[in-house]
Image (cartoon, rainbow over all chains, first blue to last red):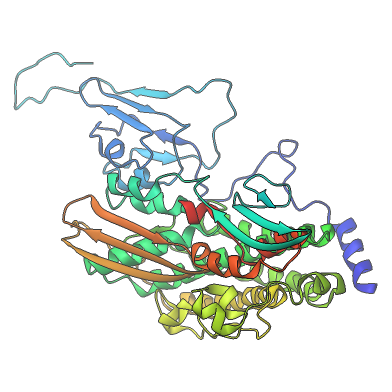
Length: 126
Length: 358
């Protein structure tokens, strides 16, 4: 009986264990894996992330210099962030906000600067 | 008369289907059927490259995900001849044991709910939250932590993080005391479970039972004794009980939560004393060959078999799950019991149909 009373009193005093989301905004822990972002200035559109993504959530068009991310296929495994040779990907500590439609995210890179050694001066395919 | 039981049933926690042959209220025979949640995961593993498969096999089970990725990585490391850093081995033990604790907590809560002890269910899952918070703190996610890599672990923990893990573990350990006491001492739970689904050690061995179902018959069988990952450096003594019934299985799982906490206490000082790298980069693809790994999941022995023919794709990935191994024992246990006892019997083997059907 005393044990039960102790548990009851503790429960009254301690409040709920679960997070009171969305009333109380979620404070993410450091290193939490959330929404994927591209730092487009660093990206060379090498397709390493798209080739390795286990869920097929990424598409990269090397010629058009576009990076397309389907957040609804992402499994938050962090693999793309780890293997990106240019550190162009990062994960925000919070997940994506709820949405009414399943939209993809597309980032387009600036046209590449023509290499002087090649000397072609060809227009970029962007 | 034959009564179909499951896969959708209010008292079932997993989509298992059984055809119960009954006379009055007594079950005379049982025929299980599978395949309701089959996802073709093993076939998919042949279509993804061996690095991507780590994330795929991790999703075989939603409760002990880390141990699945560990089993796969151990098999691949054997195939590739990769030496894993000792620190990564210890971190693997840590996440593995955290998964075991939260899995057993989940089961204890379901058991409390099944016997109608709802407040105990809430107290148990409250404690589970703390363990899930530890997963999130150390790995960034609560359930599917994605920390295992072929060649080590994805993250390292600094001294400050280890202190926080230890502090949370202190709290989790003290909170487990009252819950454990209630499970052990409550007359209602004992009346429902003592003598239910009793099997002998010989029967369990003959039926190929694994994990807590086997250990509850007195057999000290535990794959962690093989010393995979960092277990070879730790003191692991299998938790056994002699009863062979559902109550003995409960006592084994209660003991294993304590055991996992004790293993974490062994691992944390070693992690403090031994800094070092946690991941060895693996650049080559596996050559032709096959490998097998055996790891201890919360439900018993989990086996991964991997066959490669060279190149990025694997020829075959076979997963042998403990629930599948325990089903013959379940089929043996059910006849002779009343229909009302069947849900508790099914629960007593801690079934994971998601693993079993993949």
